[in-house]
Image (cartoon, rainbow over all chains, first blue to last red; front, side, top):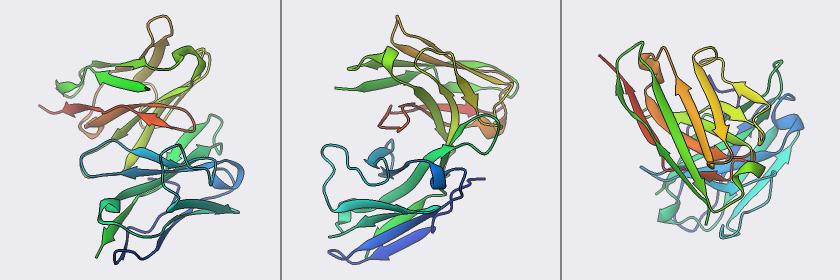
Length: 112
Length: 115
């Protein structure tokens, strides 16, 4: 029962662009930094974006992140077959008396 | 190089217990917050628990509160998860993860709860 909503799947041809939305509320995205993770089949998740729009060292600039209000978006340009994976957003949530980290429902990216 | 290596997973009967460990290296473990995150077969990521760098602040997901206990030993660069009263729905790959922001993940250890 994730509190962050993502589309189940998105797809595009190689070289094209896709965007993945992540919808939350004021208790999570609205007041905290958002991160994005890529999970290739059979592997552990990998950090793609942190603090809404920052890329860790080694992550190509084809990946970008943005945040507006209670929603965040991951963009992938120049889509490659190696980008086929599940993508998750994540952020801290402070709606309860204790904190918790929450993940999005996940989006499967398919390269046509 | 940052490394997180989980161990301790396996097959356990419903109602049983298991203790997971995570060995950290390549960074100053005592300076970082840590988490356990799990992923049931074919499902999404679920955050399980958080512990501050000193161990003074701890949070749990409602689904494990009262059954799981997170702890750390900064002298041994290790993170732990004691899991009691295990249920079938606890079956998952359990990841040790540094953060937030969660920037490094271990390779995961599989916990299977079944009779």
